Image (cartoon, rainbow, N blue to C red; front, side, top):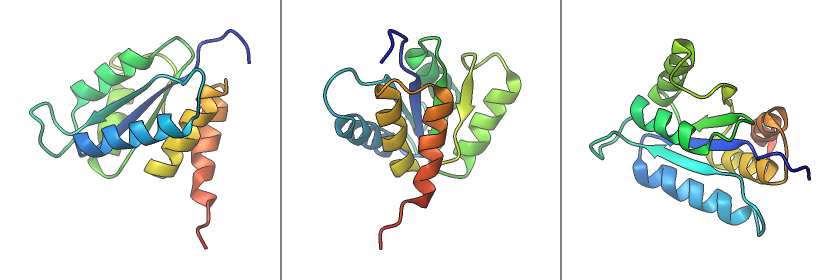
Length: 136
């Protein structure tokens, strides 16, 4: 692995607890050593169910190390909120991407890949490939 800083990961859910739990699981499964920075942005600023552009922007800023930020979302308005932030162009760090991936499996793949030194393209690909994971 190079000396480059790992890609940051942001996990956006309509629930603060779900986002935090997925972040905890993904970082735990990434194994020992250096783990990529992961931040959760769940719920609204008052703790309710929903999404918050302010929480998402703050989470992205907290994990940005200049090597890109991958944002994974659970559903619906989380997708729309991140797309709106990306369209504004100045709310999220440069090289922030919305990643089309299943939330839990994609988060694990993204964190493992980023922790292993994968660049933003590799993190996006690994998370997206999680759609192909079969359980039967």
